[in-house]
Image (cartoon, rainbow, N blue to C red):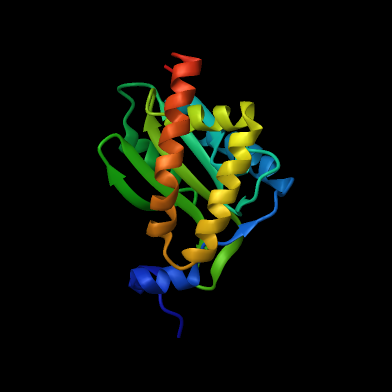
Length: 189
């Protein structure tokens, strides 16, 4: 009998869902576009402030996890919990909730990753460092290649430790995000 994902330990989840990078796939843009259209329809009553493709799959030409990251920024005062419940009704699973942020995902099954995996970052307007980081990598291909090389090294070292993989990228991401904010100013306020 297959155990439910909620019954697995962190280590068992990391074995079932390892870090795995793949060459760029043209379908990432289509998966994002379909998700964006779906969210616009489902969340029409909430009028999301902005829906964006973030993460490495938003950077053409670099290797990435086969996971499309979507960020939805809500206008201040919007009931984030109600929005999250609408998204959960679409089959997404909530991973965590913290002050002003909810993270949900789709495509994790008892057998491993589905063909399409989406991470959804629900935020309020202005909590959007990912947009600055994305744009900086798009505008600075040498930084995108450096980021790709870092991820490739971390993948080999931490394929079954998502926390260590993520932590290994943090300093680089912070540096580039700060450079982006200095360069782009209030682009995403």
